Amino acid sequence: MNICPGSKSKSFLFFLLVCLNALSMFATDAITGRVVNLTTNRPAAGDKVILLRLENGMEEEASTRTDSQGSFVLQPAGADAGHMVRVVHQGVNYDLGVNGKGPLEIAIYDAVSHIGNLEASIGMAQAESDGQTLKITEMYSIANNSAPPVTQSGPRNFEISIPANSVLDSLNVRRGGGIWTSLAPTPVKGQQGHYVVDFPMRPGDTLFKFVYHVPYTGPTALRIRPAYPVRNFAVMHPPSMNFRPMRAQAFTNPGEAQGLRVEQVVGSGPVREVPAFELSGIGVASPRVSGTAPAINPAAVAARDPEKPAAAALPSAPRQPETALWFVLSGLAVLTLAAAYAVWKRRKRTA
Image (cartoon, rainbow, N blue to C red; front, side):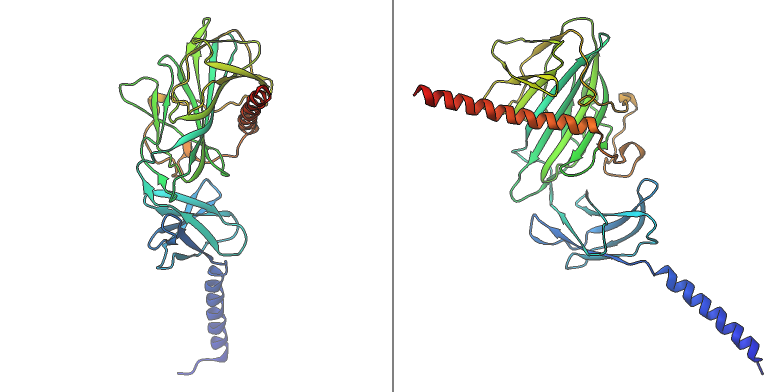
């Protein structure tokens, strides 16, 4: 059968177009990397690796598993959006943003249910009142200095204890160097004002910030119960509010920070329960150190993985108020060191 030259040319052009279209699907550079288990100092083999597309939230675009050397290759569908690589190891997510063309190095850790020496390096409770409600913001920096380094993972990693007549407004968590994430804690059945948070405690610092309010009808007694022992704890309030400890010499006043009076707990060891105190009066913190967050309806809270891309758990950019609050915490640590140095110098001079 004879085929005319024109038909051959058309067939070749069609075949060429199909090939070019197929090649364009694989034109995007592959994302490569290696996963290392820093608990064992060995490559992490067999872990699931997910490529997340950061365009409309976090959408899974590709997935694979690490080989015997911990290496992986992911092929993005396109380069028109930012990407994040997530490694899932023993049920815990480890995320790293994709920047540049070089191979990624992702560190993961073995997961345990409990680390015995977890404690907060710094904690604080900031109070303010508009005459109708008393608003309390508690913040803690939990340090995981485990050796060898491991991640504490479990449904009760962090616990919130607030007055029974209070309303929990918001909870935000941030890993050291990461971004703030809004979470919905799980209420403990039969224990009003008690919540648990399933957020993994990876090596390093994990920051917790939660806000609640109680009706204000006059002097209000409060008792703060930290989830972990706290090395340095202080209550901070506007100077127009009155602070009265329920036990004499339980607090000291090293000064003011960012326009707030600092009432520091006295003691040489970690604080396991903050001495009771009473607050009264009206005072609102400066906008630099007072932030707002979306309210949480405790009745509608359901247990879920806070690391999954759910609507209520999507990471958001840190707001300036939270940055300023942690700056205040750093100032509190400086005040503590300065007070300790002053006492030491006075004793030396007396001797």
